[in-house]
Length: 476
Image (cartoon, helix red, strand yellow):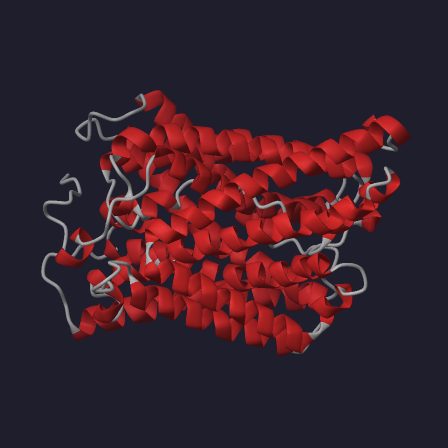
């Protein structure tokens, strides 16, 4: 099977600059995978979520790292999951995988913008937190941040990587601050957390739903591989960066969750602003209430970096699909001066802007709508991982591929564990969270939304093929 290379790449692809080094990628992976804002929504379900974190790390995160390293070794080019799925399962499945990955992020990026609004108001000091509930303020700040991130990523990956590098450092400092503060509170005032808090609760609906969200929180190792043609020596630096970045991100999740469980009563945790509120509560207890403001500033920078990473990485999917002629060809163009996929980034930014407006002014309860959007995002995001782990299983069964990183036994174990865990994670999200009032409306939303996006992918793919068939394509 022919390997991708810069020599036989399309002209637009060959123009991309290789600017990402080893430590750039480590910071990139930590920022992409670890999202401190996910911690409150998970910790709110109690101590049993620690077991879910551990299970997910062993059965999903580690297999994900193995899969990314192995598949990046065989096919290191731009496109990542899209490229791998197309190589092993055919053109339609490649497009469907990339489509789900992209559309998920069209829902996720607006959520990041709203997270930024909810946290940044704490930077303004006491008495300004109410601005997070002001729709005009939330929309204005969200759209402004989105415009800045779009501009940064169009100007160039060099500029974007510094934002992710700074965000990675700030995320580490914020996490150390959270954990250290929690440790001080526990030492001075003790904790009400006991062994009983780690038992599986009688009502397992929320923990079941959390399993899919936890898997969703652990994705991201595959993101830099989507930018394979912008990495210096990808076959050499990716294994180290994926391994270290994944381990650091996983440990940060577990330690942060334990800290919040030990220091803050779960009923006091707010889904969006929970981390800042927790730091404010703990800092007041130890007499350094002023700490909440600089912490909110650090977290705001971290959130902006997360938004930049996912906007930049996921925009490469329509870029490569544009090169393959499944989507309009202009999506596969690069900026003549900055050599970035500017049209794809602009389209992603525009769609995210529309979704920000819809989410801000749409009817319905905020908590319930958030959970429904999050759940659908989880399903769309995990579908490509079924293909990733399926591709690993195919590599394990094809000795002719040869010259891989891992043995056949390791690939079979990683592929099987990852595929089963991903499928279970998707199924678990269909169990409604406790904020959902109507079970049947939720199920209609989940099944209908999944069918809609998959059906839309099929429509675009087969319409394009029927209008302009390309000889030699393998139909899935």
